[in-house]
Image (cartoon, rainbow, N blue to C red):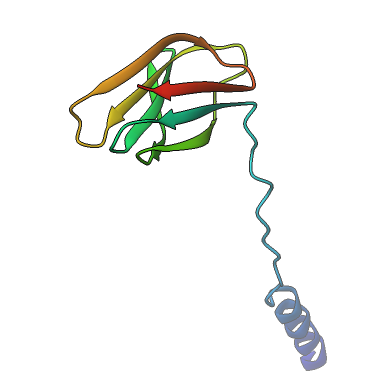
Length: 109
């Protein structure tokens, strides 16, 4: 009887022992569309896209520089409004009715 209990105890401990788990991150989702922003101002701008009434912040673009910003969550062919607000909040530049397809180039101002 003791040998049966000992055998069951060994089986239970082996079944409940620690397991090695491998965790991987999947590939980053790629965006179908992007906006190439050229900021000609002497200060940075916060760039966002408005689609279906929802505004999504893309990234801050430094003064006198150009960056290509991927637009996540917006399908190609969607009409959006682009918005760039200076970092001091004093000026906002918009471009309405932009149909995103591939990479759209926008110069501010």
